[in-house]
Length: 272
Image: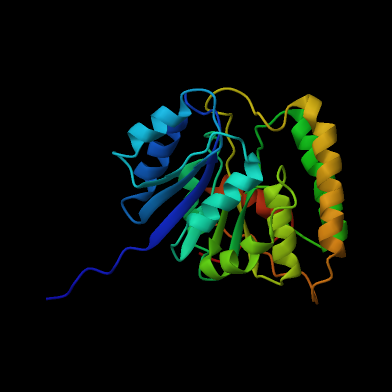
């Protein structure tokens, strides 16, 4: 008698802060999309929420596969994401924010590249963020490219799929940019010559509320701290020969619109 092939295991590392109104919907949407084909577990790093987030998560523990890490004092976005990655154990780990802006249906585009790349990063082609945040990201993208030679369109995208070897190699080094975790992670991946792929994904409005970290009044300070932090990472002289390989690939799940952005950027999309 032949046995069914084992299902791939995936941990989703997700920081959560004051998302009590929407976190249940967000987690259920991810779970319903992935569970038919993947054994998924949520690694939730709750970050000192002051609303009802903790009680909602405690209730969800009995309904969903969740490893829950809750704290009273804030550790910051980067600290929470790092804690979630440290607690993960699956061969592949996906990082995502908990605000509902990422579409779980895009996961399959990212997942299809897992064997070709060590780290797969999303590219939010129709970014649904405030103008101040988009301007800051654009400016930081130029700074990132100058320092690290990245060809990624969206080095700060929260959707990243990584192999266990990447986590083991990079997570012990991160922690310099609490408000810019992805900027730091990608920078260190480039310095380590990790093979990186990029995928166009959709980006939606927040499920509820507004961002806590990137309020307009905080943007100048965040920009300064992250800019200085990236310079410190660049000055940390690790061996580096050339930027990692970066391409954009689609699997057709989302249609021609996202692939069109890749072609417009002059990047090759392999045949499906």
